[in-house]
Image 1: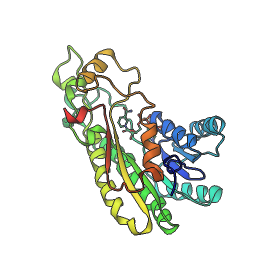
Image 2 (image 1 turned 90 degrees about the vertical axis):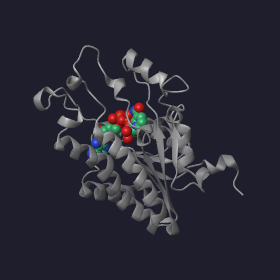
Image 3 (image 1 turned 180 degrees about the horizontal axis):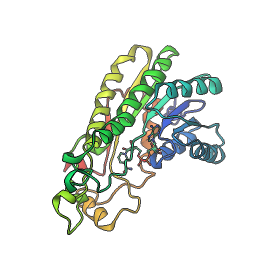
Length: 278
Ligand SMILES: NC(=O)c1ccc[n+]([C@@H]2O[C@H](COP(=O)([O-])OP(=O)(O)OC[C@H]3O[C@@H](n4cnc5c(N)ncnc54)[C@H](O)[C@@H]3O)[C@@H](O)[C@H]2O)c1
């Protein structure tokens, strides 16, 4: 029998992290590196991917690879997989973490802010769905099939507390602006995050006989120097009365991608300071 400590060990496991050069992606990669896994940083800028991979290699003494790939394109995902198999000969873990962060400005129809539903463009809709859902589908289809063929693996989808609850649009209101000029959390955020929970359940059963597990992690909002009024109002919606620190999901990621969670499949782990229970 493995010790509990050994269950968390990721030695030699190749872990693909989409959006790996982003804020939380880097944290997932650090967590994997700390437990001796091999993080593959996938993002849309080679330089940023290389920087993160290099930093993690230095910090934890592990191998790491940065790959510039637009996950909305099958040919990029195929090239990503070819590079990984060429370099390491295997893929064990996929973290579907990338998200589109569109600059939703004030432009829109008839003076309506472009983030609002009435003015939200089809182009923005398509871009957000492409990264959040289509990208996760393409990576899961390609890398998941390889894991299934080669004896198993783990897929972790990064959802959000907003996969469970509606955004509280009052949080995004700026004083003195007419309603139609107010920015809102876009509809795509709710749709992508809810869709990832469905993808999680689908994938949890699809390759289960081949040893591929799939779960979702739903984090609450992370503190990154947002406006004081936003932080204050959001904190009041959270029983723990604060936002998350960016390191507070790392232990959960290691748990979810390692044998420590070997009987966990099709679940959504919510870590949100209690926001969704209120
Ligand atoms: N930050 C939070 O408070 C929070 C809360 C809950 C959930 N999340 C989720 O966690 C994940 C990471 O969030 P984050 O705050 O680190 O965001 P981030 O914007 O810092 O990182 C997202 C990364 O995805 C990359 N990306 C975008 N399009 C891509 C594409 N086509 N191909 C490959 N990579 C692409 C971006 O370049 C970026 O580096 C997201 O799914 C987000 O929705 C974040």
